[in-house]
Image (cartoon, rainbow, N blue to C red; front, side, top):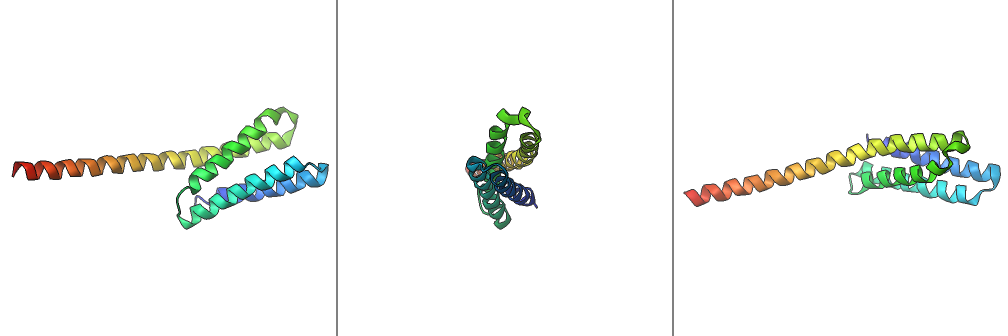
Length: 125
């Protein structure tokens, strides 16, 4: 479920990079679009497989795309759309990573509490 936005962003970035190169012969557009798109696609594949670091990769790709499009936001609709979509993906994956970290911290505290309870019950018997 959470891999779909990364698949979508990956495809859009790759198509956008190729389109930018075809229209203006901009090699930076091609390299950046394909590079960020491949990072999104890799993240989506890792998320789909349930392996670690997929969510973080998608969050990083979103941040990279946002930071690269913000300085050009007033130059037309393409940087504006890039900033908006990368912001949406960043909020989505940022929330996922945050919730995952909260769950890990909560589980760590539960395990520590269980160990303390076990130690306390054996020490008093």
